[in-house]
Every structure is written in C-alpha cells, then in structure tokens.
Image (cartoon, rainbow, N blue to C red; front, side, top):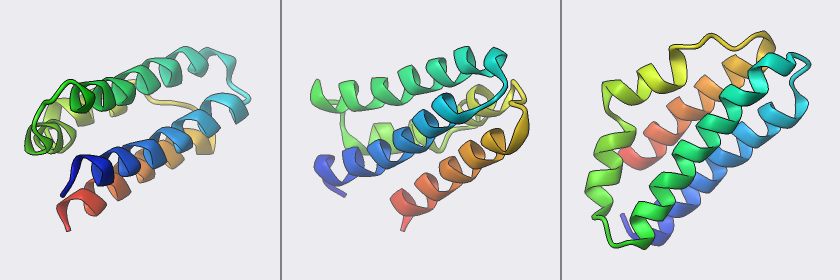
Length: 95
C-alpha cells in the first residue's frame, strides 16, 4: 500500500469522526471526538514525516488503538458509527 492510499483511508475515517463530532447531540462527547481526530491526524503527519506505511498500519491495528477509540463509551449512534468506521479502516488497509 502506498502512502497516498493509506492517507486516503485515514481521511475517510477522519470524515466519519468529524461527522460524529459535529452531529452528536451529546456535547460532552465532542472533546472525545476532537481527541480522536487529533490521533488520526497524527497518523497522517507521521506519514508526511516519512514513517513507513507498515508502521502506521501496525499502529492502527494495535490493541492500544482499540483502547484509545473504545475506552470512553460515546453516547448515541455516533459512537457506534465511529467504531464501525475504525473496523472499516482496518479492513481496507489489511486487504
């Protein structure tokens, strides 16, 4: 997988997180989505700084990433939407 393709997959994931951030009716969840956006943006920054694609894929698929995105339960359908988007991201980058 190329850097550009991985960046596109991450941007698609970030779009879902942003939708969750902007559409949730649970204002206390917005800071969690903002943190998640920052994490995903960090993956893109790492790629821009020359980190190998395989290292970013490894991090995205790591258990600590599940912990980061799933430790704080987000209310409503938006939390489920974000978790589904993470699963889709992983499926896309592993295929």
